[in-house]
Length: 420
Ligand SMILES: [Zn+2]
Image: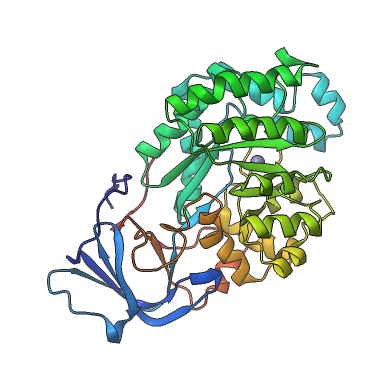
């Protein structure tokens, strides 16, 4: 199957239909629900969905190419809305050391932990970072991801953060997948700024963010609000700087303790607040009022063997949209399967399969500000969808990882196998 390289979604819809896809049950995920259309049809024009509905009602498109499936289901393309896929090296040696009884403190004293990733990322060239990220993206693409967000945050200097963001932009140009880039310079305190966190925040606000805005290297700005990272006041400064440059914000909040970062994010109308194990009901109310998505990350919860679950019931009660993501990163979630996260979101956080699937489609898209173009099967949206030879959508969630056979349509074209 040829590699389709048409990553720029710019075509205008027209009444001219390019292709029609039939013979399966459509899992539209409209309004975050399955909203099934049995024996459905999707007509595609210029990379967008022109028409969708029951096949019996499908208009006649005499010049369209016909594709007929033999049963199964069609879902929107999967969205992984929170990853850290670009980084140097990996931390499998530390993983092994810890299980052989070496303590966190000993590993940190030997230069391990996030600092080892920062050093490896700084030492790597753009091409080396690109090659390593391609290796990690391949399994995600193979399981049906058509949109992925990738953060910087292991450079922690103006030069190295810009290097990471350039790699993220290159991935978006090279691959048949929508890539959203997020600047996470406020991820950890770089060693050069030890005991001077406010000086580092000032560097981010005054120098780094204007530089990345000038080069259009980021679609959003993120930060890590936690005792071991940055305070709400410091995050507030980063958010104000981002917003003055027209960049939307999102936040790692309430992962290990409650600082009410999620309420701060809501005050800034953040796209999302992510992790949220320690979020309170008031945080949930604030997020609901601002339309901020709760991004749940069961991979880090699992790997850290946490016991405090995010307050899913509060998010449900107050109508906070919940997304699910891999959080793919070298330290706390070396996850290369979003489908595994679907199962873990249900098993560990008690989401329903319908909520989990909404988390990697419509709410995942909303967490990236893409709710008008991605995440559901509706006329006018991008024609990113997946055919699965399955009987029910819950089967996507039920199997514990593994690669299910699937046919990926990206921007209205068969994506085929992506060889990297
Ligand atoms: Zn993260």
